[in-house]
Image (cartoon, rainbow, N blue to C red; front, side, top):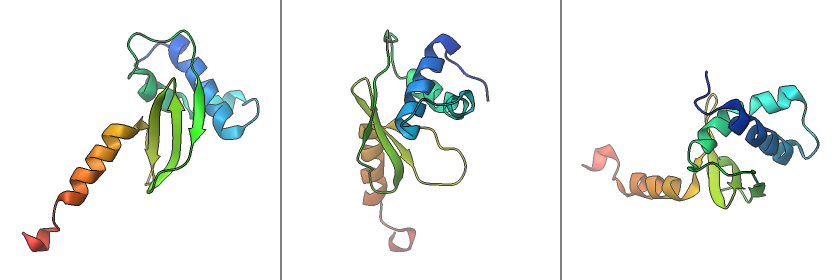
Length: 107
């Protein structure tokens, strides 16, 4: 999958995410694993920041990862395949709305 954001933006963010996950200086391969995630997150920032700060947060229910990027919280849902991060607050709203819909057999 191609990246929408320039590598000059996505690369440093992918390094910061990899450092958070691996807790050591990541290899180029490990950074590569997070390029798509970094691209998804970077697209939320306009204007782009001069630097990226990434901090791990306590995990949310049904998520495999919660973290904060420059003050904005993100989650990665548990599921099949590669799932990119989404902002936590809209995700919580979507989840609450989905839970409010009665099961189909109750319509």
